[in-house]
Amino acid sequence: MNSSGWPASFASGLHAALVRRIPPNRNGPELEQLSLALIEALEQGNLTVPLSPEREELVRQSGWLEGEASPLVLQGQRLGWRRWMQAMDDVVEALVERATPSDPLPTDPSPTDPRSTDPGANDPPSSLNREQRDAVLALDQASVVLISGGPGTGKTSTVVELLARVQLHHPGLRMGLAAPTGKAARRLGDAVRPRLQGLPCGTLHRWLEAGAHGFARHAERPLELDLLVIDEMSMLDLALMQALLSALPPCCRLVLVGDPAQLPPVGSGAVWHRLQQSDVRERFGTGAIHLKQTYRNRGAVAQLASALREGGIDAFQGGLAELDAEANVRIHRESSRRLPPMIRRHWQGHHRRLLQLSEGLLDCSEAELSGQAEPLLAALEQNLVLCPRRRGPWSLEDVHRSLLGEVIAADPRRWPSGLPVICGGNQPELGLANGDLGITVGAGDQSRLLFRVATDDGGVEVKRLHPARLRRLEPAVALTIHRAQGSEADAVFVLWPQPLDSPDGSDHDCRLLYTAITRARVSLDLMIVP
Image (tube, rainbow, N blue to C red; front, side, top):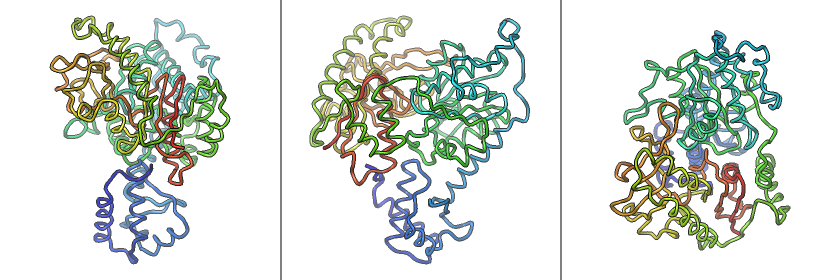
């Protein structure tokens, strides 16, 4: 499941072009296979591959490690492309340099809030554990704070307390919230809004004002911010991080939050994974905090996630073998030659529910829309069906063809009312970002799309849009696991079309499975091939 989605001819062509540009001292099929492994790693967000002694000797004999113009570089027992490795090192150095504040946060206590003059207001709430309290206080000494932790460890609640403290003691600071995807940004905004009103929240592309010709925010036109919180950092690739650093004013503080065990980004360069390596973390001193205590009890889901994160696939399978009948995780062994019947039954019941809740939403006024559509949009996000890949057995395309029919799935004009859909690109003019979930209301010429979008003042509204206004749109009865990052649901169904102990398994597959199962808040149904 870890094979490259690029055609083999494309990867081979890249290797041939590299050989022509920088002729190796020794060429052959083994060197080409090494190039292909590096290209595949880039597709999976990684910049390096592990090296066996045999491969290390091969690459040394090739001459591709010699000189500053060489294409490859060794980092311990891993091999990577020099260009990207240097770019990643530059990002790390920029963050480390930014981490030591030249000036303390400007103190301007609110004259109207009696807590601002209370000495005890400097102390984090007693309900927080030691690591959480350290994180809340970290901005007193550091300008870059790294908050890492698995699901349920209180990352978001820690961020809320950190922001509340900053807002209390430094009310004049310009603060913002961001995430790589619209869904993740909305979750962050929803979590912060009950405690802190008016904080703008959006995708990083929206903050950077992405357009057809790149980003409108850059060094010559920086963001007007004193503090930026970025959630779901594991999804942030190298290019986007470079663009963000270019657009940040020198005095802007950063709070970076994420789970290091999740998937690397779709784009090349897993910035968060690099920042979580011990040699890098220690350079941030007290600004790097890892949350370990779990507060949100998800039963067997949490136990299996911990086993997978700490012990790999063997520990995960051991946990599966110990599940009891009352566990909130159910295992289904099915043949990959057909879609499991459970998925069809789930979709039929879910679709009936969505249809019932969509009644009347075509005809209600714009003023009434947000309130009346809320039950429908809430139900839309209660369930997730996840696939590890787009094509093949139990893939995204397989699910949609089986449940909708091949013709309907490929033709938006024939999509039924109550069909979940996903936005396939950024359209800031509509308030939409790549990965935003919506739903069809009505069918045929009467069809409209409902999306929940963030407003400029940090609020949320529901928009009713004609399908023709969206440049890229796909059904979303199921999602790829990559697309589901930043999402959670009460009930999650995971299709895993290969044996868990497959010899083709990899660290990437472990991260893929970990990301999938940790989307579940209440229950998990895992369908696997015997």
